[in-house]
Amino acid sequence: MARRGWVVALAGGAAVALAACATPRSAVTSGLEQFGVPARSATCMAERMDKRLSRDQMTSVARLLHGARKAETMDPSRRNVRKALDVALEAADPEIATVTLKAGVACLLAD
Image (cartoon, rainbow, N blue to C red; front, side, top):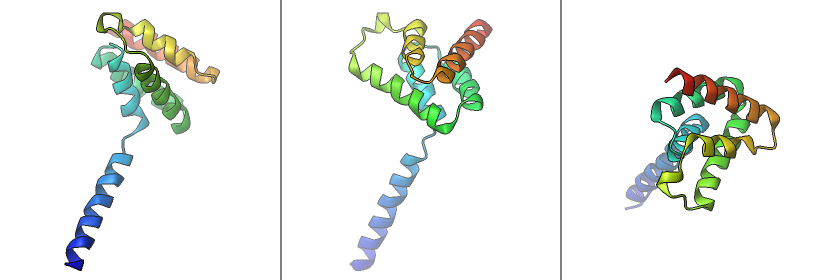
């Protein structure tokens, strides 16, 4: 019985570790998609941003996007790229704002 408890604890720990492995890039991608950015553009933007921003900065962007989405219950018809960029541009870090804007322009024009 003690062995079974150990196996359950190990499995639970592994699940927590896997959940923690979600990258800031994937969180930014999903945050952008939640705002209505097309999946292809959201992926492109997150990849470009990930190359230019630190992990902490990417985590900040992900938090901004997810926090803003939860803070206001957005009508699906109001979800759009501009709204997502507005949220990211509100970051206190000017580098985040600059990189986000450049990524948005490059990726959205490419589609």
